[in-house]
Image (cartoon, rainbow, N blue to C red; front, side):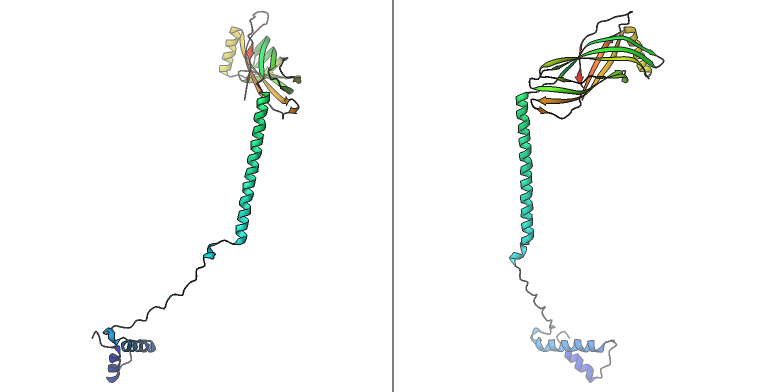
Length: 268
């Protein structure tokens, strides 16, 4: 029956001769019977419903608002680190600003202009290719113009190299010198001798073309080591390269031509 207490079943089983259940743990079975009887006695007004003890209340946890804060030592270290980073950034920014301001003021005062290089004259009396050996005799006059009012130049090293069809065939060192502000100086580079020159079919074809025309396309490069002087201040050494693309007529006694002055360019 739905509302019959469990104790009735227990009493009836004893009266008729209760047989031992097949459970391995008899004490566990008797415990369930006692719990059922107690529930029936206490909860008889629930119309046969079984008593289920309520769950114990969860222990209260005290939340402290201060636990969300940080360790005083870690907070102090973080504050000091942020202050140091801010100070370092401000110092770097200030230094860069001062340097930029100094450079801008110097530029306004000196207003430096590019030094100009010219290949004003060239004399080619020999340029013969024989069995991959080039015989040459070239003299080149160079003019260097410094248009700056407050900038002078130290030419610590000047090397001139001569190329034909991209292959170098000669080089020479020129005398170092000092060039004052707003001045013009002249140099002479001489290339004379013979050297091995290996050319491909296309380059040999270009040589034959130049030989027939009597005008040779020769490239001369200047490799410089210079220092600039701003009044009493000298700069660090710089190494610009100057490139002169020339068309030089052969003057060997049988043919002659007029050479046209060329402006040389910076080869960055």
